[in-house]
Each structure stands twice: as C-alpha cells, then as structure tokens.
Figure 1 (tube, helix red, strand yellow):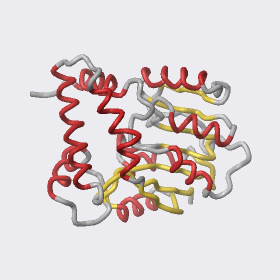
Figure 2 (cartoon, helix red, strand yellow; figure 1 turned 60 degrees about the vertical axis):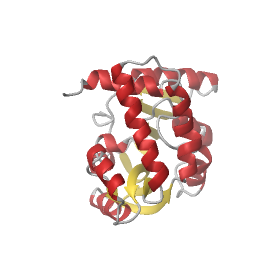
Figure 3 (cartoon, one colour; figure 1 turned 90 degrees about the vertical axis):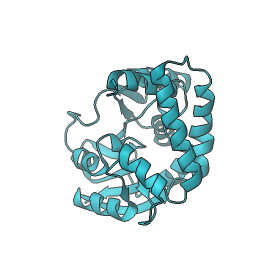
Figure 4 (cartoon, one colour; figure 1 turned 180 degrees about the horizontal axis):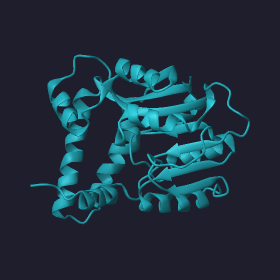
Amino acid sequence: MSIDQTEYMAALTDLHRGLDRQGPGDADFSRNILEHLPAVPLKPRIADLGCGSGASALLLAQHYQSPVRAVDSSPVFIDELKARAKQADLEHLISPIHADMAQLDWPAGSVDLLWSEGAAYNLGFEQALRTWRSLLTNTGIAVISEMSWFADDMPEPARAYWQNAYPVMGTEAENVARAQRSGFCVLSMQRLPSQAWWANYYEPLRERMQQLAITPMTQSVIRETEEEMRLFEQFSDSYGYTFYVLQAA
C-alpha cells in the first residue's frame, strides 16, 4: 500500500513540532566550527537552508550580529522560527523565508556564508551542492552536514536501513569527491559526536512521542523513528553526520 506523502509529512512535522531541533546538532560544536572558519566579511551575508525552527539561524545571527536569510519548506517551522527570533530579540536579524531551497531566485554571488544542517539529503548531497554553488561569492564558505558512512565496511542492518531510507548516502571520501566535482574545495570535516544526537535530538524526540495523539500514520512515523534510534545506538561508530566545511573554488 502506498503512503500518502502529504499525510506522512504532516505526521512527521507534528512529531518535530515545538522541538529545539528537527535533527541532530549541537550549539557548542557549531560555534567551534564558526570560530575556525577562514575570514568572512565583517558583516557576512548569511543563508541557513533547511533551517527548521531556527536553532542554527539564531546561533549564526547571534555569532555574527549580521542578517540571516533562513529558508524552510515547512510553514509550521517558519512560524516557530519567527516566534523564537522575537523571543531572543533577534528578529531584526532573521529573515524567515517559506520556500523550496532548491528553487531560490537569489542573485548569483549573494551569499558569503551558507549553512545547512541535515537538509541537503532532501536533494541529495551532490545535487544540493551544485544547486547552491552559484549563490556563493567566489571565496564563499559553505558548512553543510550530511549523513555519511565512516568506513567502507558497513554493518548489514545499518546498510539495509539506509539503502532504503537514503540510497545515495556516501562515505566521507565519496562526499569529498562530490564536493570537489560541484565546485568546492574541502577545508575540513568534523563528525558530530554521537552524544549530541541523544542529548539534543533523540531524547527530546522520545518525550515528544509521548505527547502525540496517535493515528495510524503517527504510529508508522514513530515506528520508523524508533528503528532509526535502535540502529544508531548499535552502529553509531559506523555512520553519522559529518560537517563538511567547504570553500568555493
């Protein structure tokens, strides 16, 4: 039986509603990356693509005290970002944009720093890089996290799960090659610690599961999420999010 994608996405959005993050991440980890980036303009033009409810957009605005264009396809999360920006007294720096991050009509070279956490997979890593490359200046920086295999010998249960969930998931070496083909040089790679997955994403998600009104579609989404958690608990040394720090070449 085919899944109604609209109903599925609504259930998935509802599961993540009200959470600080819609995927794994960590503010201190991100700040460390920012502190070690090559020099960007004093007031960089920043874009956060696939921003969710804004954890990264708010951090970027605060860190640089510079405007951030924050794009997401979910009106629910864009509304949450607006509320969070106002609460943090950062609404003057945040431009929440409800849009498809694959169809941005921004001028070429209009972004100095492009940030995207856990969202490139919606397009596929290489397609995302090719789509976004023209947005950057000639020396622009992109920091993009991507699900990555840490070695060539994948455990079979994890390989089978991700072959179904994300067939183009690559090794870090494959993703470096994809970035280079897409017009970037790779400055560094940093793996998000597995602890950040649990503390900042999976544990809040478990709490949220207890609050949901249960429908057949909600049950399906919860089962998938629990399976993902079980696999990560077993095999987090084999895969996870790698942050690729890239510069336009």
